[in-house]
Length: 483
Image (cartoon, rainbow, N blue to C red; front, side, top):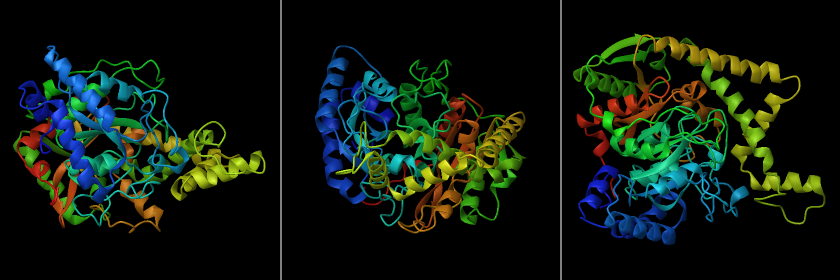
């Protein structure tokens, strides 16, 4: 059962080939057996999962149906879950039990999804390797000596290792798409505002967006259907109708205009990955797509702009963690200043502290105009580049990452090297566009992803292209040895 996709599970439950309780018990046993190798979970919720599975079986027995009814999933550990630890991968929130469910959690629970647990992540979603977690690094099931990508590496590793069929994740600068590429999964970052951020602990509020991680585009369509929609509790949620994502998966790609930016194929891209991306382009051409070279001239400025804006927002968002109201508090503080300093110094890890300091500097008097304001102007130029490109093409295609997954610890002493791995993904977050990564092959036994970007609210178009590609390739069906 652990090799079944969400779509296959839905059909199996509908045909009464197995029950949700049986499936849940099987996967919980598998997690207990295999997760110590990869460290993909922070918390398991066995009792909740079995009670939800039992309720789902009863709902089906009473005539209800639905693609997510009885389907096991897990949540990245920054989605608040009532009465369950929501740690954000940080010592700061190790003792925090959320008093309410995030909108994403509530919506998926209402659809009948079964929550197996909370997945490991880079601390406060800050990282590209899942090595900054207070609970230890997550390992890539394809090679345990390598990173799974971040910050949603726990969700990605769990799905890749067939511990569960799908999981929720978040993407601030590529944190769904990059781990999807590193672990041979399909990952979708929706349009900013498509999925509610209420109850999703913030890193950078204007960039964060929740989305699905699964093995296929079909599964991502199912999970996104349950996650998406307007939420009056979230001031950044957009009141836009949610289409039936599964209904559009089988549309023809005949005449689809695909743009390939010339800036993507620079010296920084591993030539073996470039070859796999060109192979993907040829496959889509066979399906009727038309390829056109385009330009995104301001892409070169995206990384410096992003690494001013994101830390600036992080320094503001994380100021609430002060040792007073909730979360970690230092022992025996001498006074209020000592309480603040030691609670934050002991509760936050080095990567989070680094970004808070960068952000505070960028927002300080005398530097706001020189750094933060200039970065926001570059952000607008990046968006304008995409708007111009989408006047000529329907989607944009390129590599998800410039290199395959690196070894654990290889970039720990050089944060800038890790930041540069986000070069292809962060532009979608700066512009608020939807983006998807899908499996495209292997380099040295490690998975490689191809990225698709689309205009606002065109997630269905991305899922359609990925699904048609996956009907004609088998990269997404490969399983890591031992799992």
